[in-house]
Image (cartoon, rainbow over the protein chains, first blue to last red):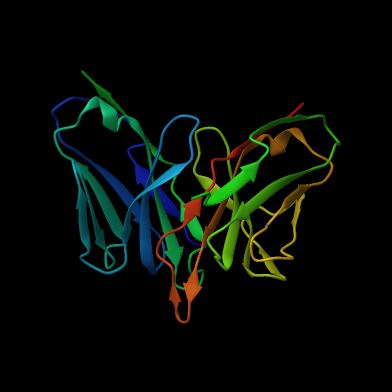
Length: 112
Length: 116
């Protein structure tokens, strides 16, 4: 059974600081997704990572994937208040295709 | 572009009632999914479909049924609603072409269901 663990689950940070969210998963996978969710809203796709060593960046967010360590990271650079949201990683197993197993989410609050 | 459309957005059910959450997509996607999200948690897969006429159980299928008579529609039926089914329900779709599964999974806006 595929398990996905995120940490931290809650993150409060000051504007301008850097931080990293970690996503560990338990079995071999060939795809990893990062999503953002604002309160009461649907999921917004941020990144799709498909291969070992993949790195993608959009604005102040950068995601990377290490398939050997079964670890993905979401790095936040110089945080701003607009990044406050819940961030989910989700993993598709090699046999489950696009059926995703989600982590519990990291609730990020960026304080002025 | 409509994308994935879910109805209703909000619903309150009494224990034991039944209802259907509707989901339709206009992207000609062959894969469709239903997830539920409990407060403060990630999404869990209820059912999925790889094409019209084909459905299969996900992680948490008990208390639900689905059908897929067309490519566009994937309704989720709740029978004999229970308080444990109070949740937010998300429908999603994606495309698979040949050996490749489409990278982007599109989510609907969600349906907030409360069972009292």
